[in-house]
Amino acid sequence: MEMEDGRSVNHLPPGFRFCPTDEELVLHFLYPKSLHLPCYSNIIPELDLHRLHPWELDGKALMSGKRYFFFSQKMENRVLENAYWKQLDMEEPIFSGGSGKVGVKKLFEFYIGGAPFGMKTNWVMQEYHLCNWGSALSFHYPKTKGIRKLDSNYKWVLCKVEEHKGNAQSFNYSDEDGSELSCLDEMFLSLDDDLDDISSSHFL
Image (tube, rainbow, N blue to C red; front, side, top):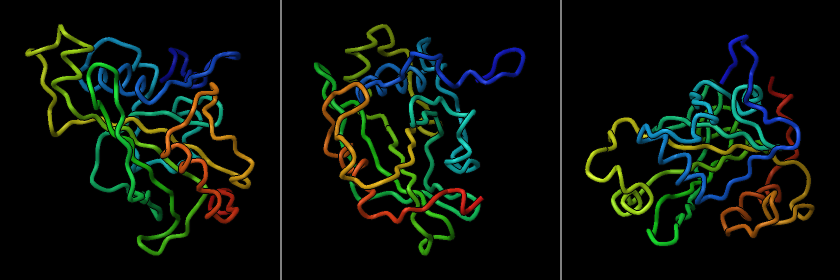
């Protein structure tokens, strides 16, 4: 996202933080984005996950604290040039009061090299997917009932990327706003136990 003079506006102004819950990311950003509804989703840019290594997200993705947020089109694989995102065998449902399950969160680790023999780095990604369109839309967006359909070949996902450093024991398992984290969030933070202290600068 850029201003008319070309300056990036993906960094929030001083004093502002972007720390929505999983439910808020799905209902107030990912759903409107996928249905082309006017909402806040335009503050999060669209990026091609195939083209950018995680350390190249600075200045391109929405940055809040140490986290990068961006939309990407849903894809079968997440392979970049001499690197790839590997999905872990774990995903977590996202629920919303009154409408049940509205999304799914998946976890990925970033590897340097060709699959499946790449070297694990400290970069991790949470990827948010939509589900349960009928009940969620009728509850949260009643005006869209029966008039908008999602193109199955053009689905968006919302990505949250972060680099972890140090020992997992140094982390407090709560979000930036002090709220409790889910089991997948705790796993997201505790990955450092299994990671070598690899700096991305070694691969630039």
